[in-house]
Image 1 (tube, helix red, strand yellow):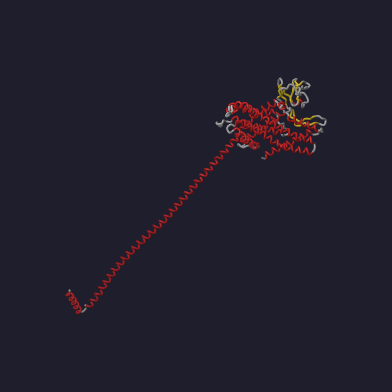
Image 2 (cartoon, rainbow over the protein chains, first blue to last red):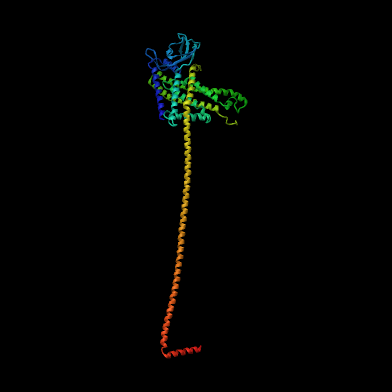
Length: 362
Length: 166
């Protein structure tokens, strides 16, 4: 219990620090209200996007020069051969990176192949039409995923080892994590999948639960980039759920999709495409739910923090600080809740796929 | 929607897929399996321990019931033994009393017969003594009566007179 509180306290503290850092970024700019508003909007958009370097914070000097604090990350491109270079070559999108005679430009968070001057061609709707190389860069999000990967591996490996050392009892971190692991097993996996089959899915459910949770929590810290507000990440998670569901579907599952028992034949024909579509909609909803919840939370939270600078007086600013604080706590809950929902629904879909045909008379 | 698609990054998807699947596999091997096994083992152990405790409790209860039964039996036996002993005692006293009674009456009887015979003997002796004494007296009287001739003749006469009468 104490440990749990301390974890929360640390998270909260880190969260509070994020206000401070954010404050520093905006500080010292005496611009008009609308300017500030659009700037905040742009900042939020920027914050929600992936980036090629791990930027902790940036500020503008009095001379109007933008300063960035962080470190560059490797850019990996596939463009007639593997091209690896440091993202520092982009200079935060200001310059064109030259690799093996090719020129690349980081334009609005995407890498385009350009000429030496970095010209970007636009179509009628102001979209860049330059060629985009296949991009496998270790972006900020990928770094976060790697970090979470390392943290989870370290954490749970240690927990597993403590069992061996301590005669079947967890020690240290394991004491805190074990109830959660058991919760996932007893409250999520077993009731939804059933006593018989649940063991096969435990690895995925536990991994996805802790992954989403930890990633969401990191998103609330100032160093963190929220990984789950990228559609690519949630798509990947939902796709794995879909693939596992589809591959573990038994005869009964497919029968319920293609030839629904217990309804007249014309209904069966109508239901088949609907059910088939349903199998795709289910993971799709998983993807959108996680993405939208986290993104919305961040936008609202950051907008409220941004309001402090728009109001620029102590009543409005302290009010929005209070609001942001409350919302931050809510986001902590949402972080866990979304992990829980994703896991429960995945377990539910697996449960549907492996469910045996029970009652014959319907 | 367009923004969403625009935001989609194949690279991120690729890394997420690779890393996440690797994480699942690694954790399955190094963490989830040992953790869940340990938890299961422990739960199994607790369950077994509880069951055996329950069993031991039942056994204990049985044992206690047995003990109680044995105690009850012992108590009954003691009761019976005591009763028997009391009976025996009473009987012994009764017997002894009877014996003593008969013995006493026998002794009394013997004593009585002895007294009777002694009495008889004494009587006989007394009688003999009296007879002798009376004879002696009679002799002395007779001697004195018949010391004179006259008296002797008179007697003979009277006797003869009596004899004639017969």
